[in-house]
Image (cartoon, one colour):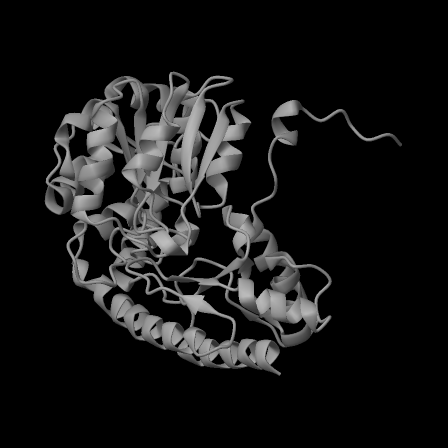
Length: 401
């Protein structure tokens, strides 16, 4: 039977690498293999009880019907209050949309804004889905390399040089997945000054790791630094990471009314509303005692110190401190070269390294090329210290034996 004539649209994209690696690791586990997964960006903590209890109560009360496409009025109000409380930003209900996870909000934004041959500026290393979502629309991702020597952060000169008349959108993610890099106030100001010179460029700021703060500095995004950008900035956020609610699938976005309205129209023809029960849980998370985040954050900080020290003790590995999120992004170029020279891997690539570690040592990592940066790898320390110690011991043995 011949292959089905799949659309150009679907042929432009690839499966999410992080989800694919996690699926492979889980399959090997189910077969009885001793596998430690460091690929998934998912806190190992349970959702706080007060959030779960709010959802249970909603079920008992029969809150199981359709809701408004863009979210319940009470959840949108909680999102508005969150932006005022945490970010000193003012929004109205028609400037807010609640989606089925942060990914859907980014997806809706790109489909609402981008046309074929528009350009989207994406600093690399980038979250794995940015490029594919942009390509799905027919737009052209303009990937700008920001390596370890510049702390994985885009410079104002790089941004200014990349902007042209075709540029439609600039995506910024701070704290960053995969690097943990956080833009300082001065760095955001410098980028904002560039963007002020180019009023045709929209800004998508992905703040999903806002509360996973490892450096002790107050969170800032580019709009908090430069309010003049409000009429063309879309803030993308959600409850998945801060409240350990990845499976509940609630994200939200705030931005100009016309764009939010277009995103809502798209959502009305795809998923319709997010799950009613999950919306109640998300509202409880946003309105509840924010101290529920502290135990997770304390654990992430402790794990980060261990991971950073251990990675930098391994021959051929260099890793910068993470300032936010729960990832370490290590430069493994020297280690890859050493393994290749010893004929332990078949190519000088981070993919070969990741396959070697999974097949020989039972450790699942994500190659840097999945994030647009060859020669690196990402590990998540959103897992137990016990898992981290065993996994890093195996990685050390694999690279130094």
